[in-house]
Image 1 (cartoon, rainbow, N blue to C red):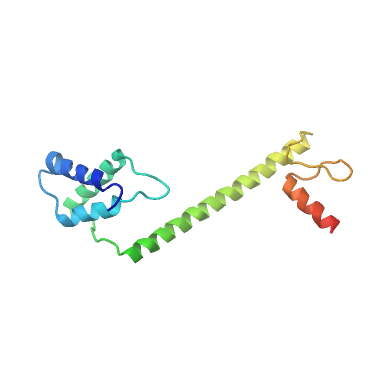
Image 2 (tube, helix red, strand yellow; image 1 turned 180 degrees about the horizontal axis):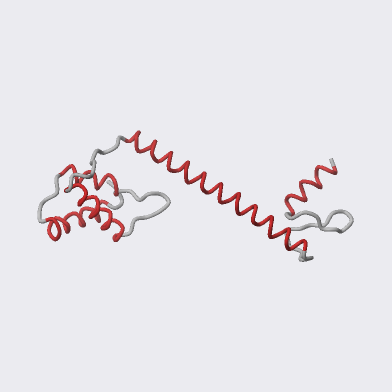
Length: 144
């Protein structure tokens, strides 16, 4: 049983009485419970979210525009893996972009004579490069 099942059943009952004036087919109810029973990681459904999605899907169903076939656990796992891979790729692109931006900011600060806590001097006391980690690795290689 999903975390949202009781909210979904409550919303279904409300829609049956107030909006559609009929009992929903069991297959539709099972589809809605399967689709929205668990929150999509890393997000959480609010009651308003569930209400909107269930009304949208139910309307589409009664107009014959919703496939209510429930995916197998394997199909769900494969879809989740694809979605997580996509999220990971997006996060990595964002991380690389932010690292590039930080490098630019550090270079700008350094060029204006502003010393950051991440910049370290070389043996002669001159600050080189942008990040202490980068300079530390360079210094280690020179000493080896």
